[in-house]
Amino acid sequence: MQSSRAALFSAELRKARSFPPVIRAALLGAVALLAVSSFIVAQAASFADVGRADALGGFTTGEVVMLILHYAQVIPVLIGAWIVAQDLPTGPRRLAFLAAPRRVALIGTKLVVAALAAGAAGVGCTAAALVPLMVFAGPSDGTISLVPYAWLISSWVLIAVVTASLVAATRSVTFTVVPLLIWTIGLSDLIAVRVPALSGALDQVMKSAYLPGGATPSSVHLLSAGIQVAVAIALGPLLTARRDVG
Amino acid sequence: MIDVTNVTKTHGSVVSADRVSFIAPPGAVTGLLGPNGAGKSSAMRITCDLDRADAGQATVCGLRYRSHTLPMRVAGAQFEGSGAHPSRRAIDHLRWIARVNHVGASHVEQVLEQVDLQPQDWKRRVREYSLGMQQRLGIAAALIADPQVVIFDEPANGLDPIGIQWLRGLLTGLAREGKTVLLSSHLMSETELVADRVVLMDRGQVIGQGNVPELVREHGNLEAAFFARLERSRQQDGLADGAR
Image 1 (cartoon, rainbow over the protein chains, first blue to last red):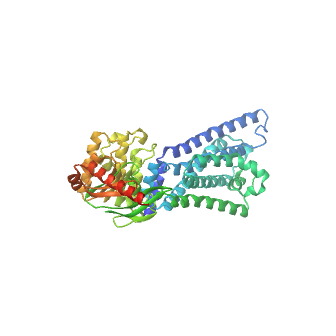
Image 2 (cartoon, each protein chain N blue to C red):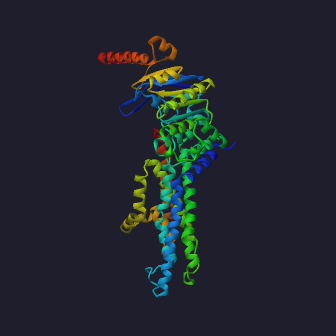
């Protein structure tokens, strides 16, 4: 007989796969990235034809595609949020904890599923964004290094897990997703310029590894990011374990 | 068997369960009867380890609900509606519950038939279900692992007269199979028709309990029995407040 943990994992995986918003976020994200990337590659090619190589602000086409992928981190945020949020309404929440009353195990399993789903979406979306580049890019773009993309996908996995855990902790999608997006897509950069210590913030550490002009994070920065992830991951299960399901 | 002993639960200044004690034996339908806010649902949630008791304990088949390895195989419970996310298909909803509880996929279809949901509705999204169909889906989720104990919170809500008649047959049938059936209701006449025993509750307290035939013999019907106990309980509370 399958162990209880394996059964719970398999059930949560099935649950995520059969929940339309999770699938929709990943598929729409991939299609949108394919479209935007195709547009950028086509624009770059037409600018090059008329002798305007600097039309992309001095960035190569590949670097622009990477920037688009960076802003597409809304996808792992949504995936992480939905995997927990499908059980936030009172009815589903009660049933989830009736089926798996060991709360830390249940939330922990959801975080693993969020990581897997975000990883898969990251691979799919990155591939969708790179296809036009690989098919249509000229020889000047050179070979594409996969290392920054590996960092990007790792970042998506961490973002999804942190989001999932924070949604479990706050029991609110809005109060988790909105501040997270405001922080990661703009506010973090604005404040980091004035507060150098913020270069150790999780999103700053991860993006320095994959955005153009960045560098592999130092061990201090990686440790700082790891601590932030660990704290965020602990919050969801711990607060869920202490509260009444209602 | 369900054994609730001296369970107390407060939410801020509101006492939702005050030293609640009762037993729901196997082979019988036990009804928790009382007005809204009497503490029926709180007692059920504590029994299922959804809420934590401040004092006392509740066991299902001798153990806390969460101490069972596969708890839904021991006790199935339904609280208000289907328990499914509206975006999910009914059959997918039951399949994940089946998988957690090591129940074969074929049993999902059996239980959907048992609750009289038509095959053409199995793949519909739950948001397209009527209130009665959602109620049946919730009952299906409670029964999916063929538990020894079933707990239903206001199961007649949303059911039409045919559905209510079907529910009566289901509850009494489960009890005849030797299962422990615990249901909560504020519908006195309906409870009188299905319950073998009742626990009468008001403002978080048990104000009386006994076998339905005996209470009916004594008071004429269950409603009269309830109000007689309610009056006595409130008089005692008044006397106690006066003495203070």
